[in-house]
Structure formats: structure tokens, C-alpha cells
Length: 222
Image 1 (tube, rainbow, N blue to C red):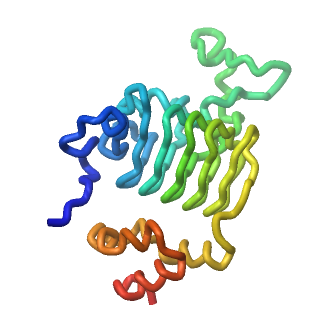
Image 2: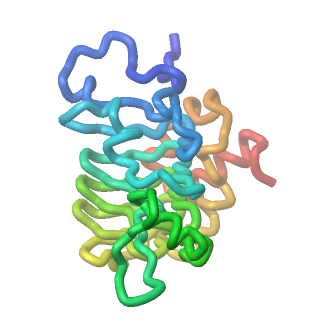
């Protein structure tokens, strides 16, 4: 009998090993309207991985969102900083008087609309984010990208690109431009789960051409 993980369950039933218990699917855990996570994306932490929403997604006071795609792997300590972390730079100081309310807020409130927002932070599908990586506000990370451990990501990352360092810089492209275009067209993460299961060996070990052929055979690509 074929069995696949249940994306609506936080953990797989029967988990007893510590490493397994440290891994959770994020979608069923999220309650904040500021965070969206696709199916099968998981977080692994040696602390309490169920606290991802409050411990790893920071500064959610503004309207901006964190949007994470499907089948993403996020390692322990990764942080996502949203735009409300930014201090205004309208004059001589960056001190945020307004957050303390009272007269300070009254005298500065009219300038709040002038504070620049970097917009939503968007993590594509099938992205691997290493331990202690920090994703800064408004960054978009393309599908299939790899973010190295301890990387500080301050700008957009193209699809299927490996980055690392502080600030993060491109280390290599995982595939040729032609194969990257092919993988983005195939978009295996959007296949029905039964088709993914049927072709999981190809997805895991095959070439982009192999995936393209599997998609055609399944009637998912012309």
C-alpha cells in the first residue's frame, strides 16, 4: 500500500526519533494572516519547531506578508524579517519615537505614511534555506534556490541559484539557463500528489529533461 505524508498534519504519525520530532509541516501551524505557507514546506529545529510563527518570523506589525511556497526546507534558526523592522530615515535620527505612543506618536503620526515599505517577502517553491540564514524585508527568492547557512540575504535570488555569505552573493547556478526554464515550466510542485508520488524517483534523481518527459507522460505539459 502506498502512503504519503499528510500535509494537514504537523508531524507524521508514529514519530518518536528526536530528529523526526524536530521536523514539522508549517502550513497547519500558521495562524497569522501575515504568513502564507504552501503544502509540505517544513521547518526543522533542535528547539521547539512549532514556534516558527513567533520565533522565526519577525516584525509583523505592518501590512507586509511572508509568503512561502510548497516543498520548502527550512533549517533551524532561519529568520525572516518583515518590513516593519525598518526604521524611518526622514531626518536626523532613525529612533522610532512613534512606537511608544502618547505625545511622541501624536507629533510624528503625520509622517508615518512616508515610511518606505519594501513589500512582501516571497520564498518560491522547492527552496532550501540553511541554518541561521536571515532573509531581509522585501526579498524574493526564486524556485529551487539554495540559501547557505548563516547567509544574510539582502537582495533577490534568481531561481535555482545557490547563494551564501554576508551579504549573500551568488555562488553558482544549479543548472543551465535552458534547464532552469525547463524546470520552471514543469513546476513539479504543482503536480497532483499522486503524480508526484508516482514520479518521486525521477523528481529526486532525474535530470530536468527527465522531469519534462514525466510531465508530458502525465498529460501535465504539452
